[in-house]
Image 1 (cartoon, rainbow, N blue to C red):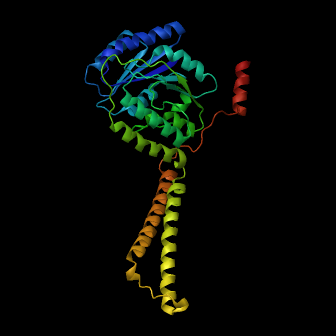
Image 2: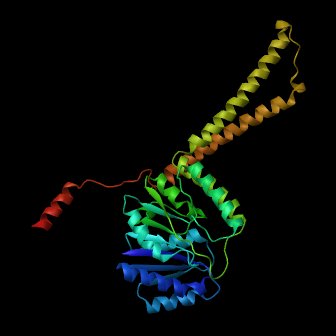
Image 3: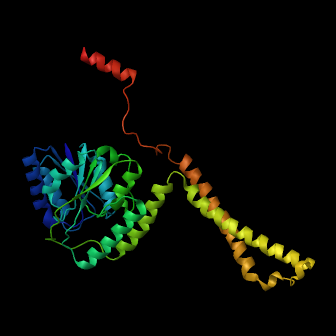
Length: 330
């Protein structure tokens, strides 16, 4: 079974054609299709169309949100309902070509867990393409997951990946990065990108600002999600050491100058208020960072015991499993 999760936001003009193309591919490749449309607060009649499709086709299921919660929420809802061992995602605007699905499944079959699409030739305006390429380069450099198009909506996952990656906010574009941090194998596939036929893009310039902030979040989660004190504590110790060293230097200078040793000019602290102020601020800020690190460690340790700090690829069969297998054989 192949599950296909499709977030929908005001895409009523394209849903019928998208459904036709998906069923065409499934029939040609003999897939057992599980189509999940998630209406993310549409106001153009998209939900009525999804209900009609579900009535006509037993492979179609729909979910309607009370309001627009964002793509990450829509994907999470779809992933929770997915039944297939393989899960595809694609956008509902027909720019992603469903005929690429067999190539995704062939690619993921080569010992990969996540395959991300790469729209090498894009049919979008230049003012969207250039910032997107810069952003993808930055994500690859900071995270170490080298993909040309992190934000491509067309991706394929093994089901076990989705059980370990938690989406919220706008982290949907970073699923390959989050999966790689858990030890899953990530690859990419160059795909056909089609020009938009209906509607308009749902993203504006604010997308890049939010994307950069989300990137910082992902960098922290993947690097220090289970050990936040290593990041916060390191920064805190550095600031604390700088402040303490400078205060010790000022105190030593003041004391030695008062004793008249080395013919030093008497130093008055009131003549160097900036040094004292910055040193004290550095001490306080360092202590605050370390305190935040301790609180974050407590939160990680006790808040959610179900979040594992590891990811198991496979297990050897236990004695009970072998006994059950032997009984079944007899």
